[in-house]
Length: 369
Ligand code: NAD
Image 1 (spheres, rainbow, N blue to C red):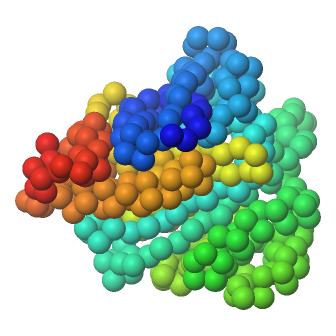
Image 2: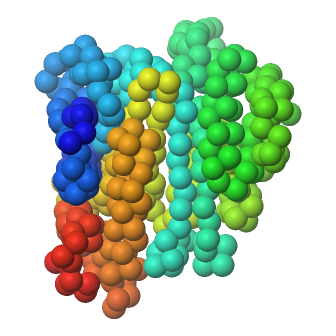
Image 3: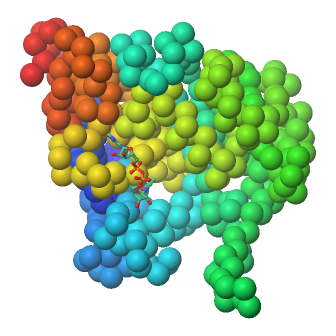
């Protein structure tokens, strides 16, 4: 029997608790199958933590994350807390976690499922076979740059943010992207705005320099505005996309529509010491509590956790196959429901249970509910 791994769950707000519940269910099933011991502890984060403790992330929760093998986060935020000062907003917890755990490389796979091609607003022939990995820098750039403030001027208010990157910050995420590409199709497109921004000029120069250590990997550069267009024109040209914090945030939400829904996109945030897994989507207050949230992004995030943190690569594949099988069986939450007679409109927990049953060795195909 292997050593007990420690998982910290931060369910968060809105649909966060709904989707993490299903992800944990799946994780427990694969751990049981693979004889892996897992200790799970849960802490409120974001708005839930503000309501209970007056701040979005407690010292106790942060300490627990630093002692863990992995962290699973749902999502934070919601209109209830929108008027809080910026360091007391739920999203401050997210930024603090990323910074404190030094999670500089955010991996966001964009994978299409054959049975879901019609859910994308893009044409079937454009999205069929797309398999992209976005590697987004996560602890630098404009979300963390200083100074940042809103000030009074003679002509009204003025808001300032700072976009800065150091060579070291770019080098380490570039290294993560080259390593990722080496295990895929060996092609990286680095995305920046070097025709306008100095930080992007340093980005491009540094990535080019890093590429010398990876001669087997093909590197191209692309401006972010062109990339936004190319992602919907011809997404199959991309293998690994390497980009900064804000560009990666925006491009991955755009790319989610290739898969059919933002509810399909998982992510892994990796550093030298710690790892956090979370769906790409937010807390979706518009559907919270309606049992309508798609849990597949959270469940696929747990598959990434098995691969990168829990030393269970076979379990990761099993979960990914179970997701595929569940979609092939026709199970759909509202966001990916196409109104065909072959589809069954399912709740969040029905999707979780269908995936869980696919992982069960005694499963009878076609009899999933
Ligand atoms: P969102 O991702 O929460 O929702 C965007 C749209 O996608 C909504 O219509 C929502 O219903 C839908 N959607 C999202 N996830 C879904 C799922 N799993 N299944 C089905 N539909 C889904 O983005 P938003 O509305 O811009 O933000 C809502 C809140 O979430 C804000 O407070 C924002 O700051 C926060 N947010 C948090 C994170 C995070 O915690 N990582 C990320 C993004 C946004």
